[in-house]
Image (tube, rainbow, N blue to C red):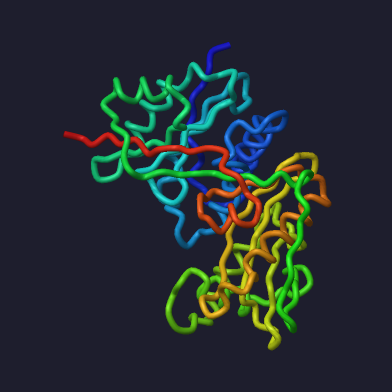
Length: 300
């Protein structure tokens, strides 16, 4: 049966179409992780961040189906202009068609960038023939082998680990992310701002027991690590991580991440991935596992 290409629905909710894509991302990585850079947790986190998600262009996302089953996905994360091409390895022959689709439907201001693994010479060759050129923009991924790693951390006196399941406090959550991502001053605590934070923790597959915060002696959240794990899979995803600038270099970020990793290991994860090459992650036990480059084509 011929492969059928479709457009994603124009609904930003956690729809049946959303779940079909999520199930595709789980399926292609079940036996062996083939694309650690865009796991199902990243897809769900994307839809949890409605404040920055370009919902007007969701129909630009492309799906390829074989007998009704999704076998490939061309998507953006926040807005068009950047495209990820994700496919079942049995359908690698779709690479050229997917690249051409991204050119046609996902350009922004005359430019399209596509992320290509540095080891994927086939797609590099296709992109070069289509007029794409590599840029200095890159994405790196790292992993930690949970089963082989002795997870250990210490906290300063008076600090404690708490999960969002134990203390679901939107103001504390909002503040640690606001401060942790280097915004100055105190955050807006309006109902609208707090509702946006609630949405981040309201995805259909969010597990609040693996959303980890470090609380200071006064009970404020000063470091945070969000984890994503699906029962029956052997991997977890770290996203996001933030520490209040006033509390850095105390080992709090390390504690939050490793506690989240440990809890995912207890649930069945054998490894955890993070989309980063920061020395912080390497220092606490993560190892580089892939590097990808953004290739760009500009309209003449």
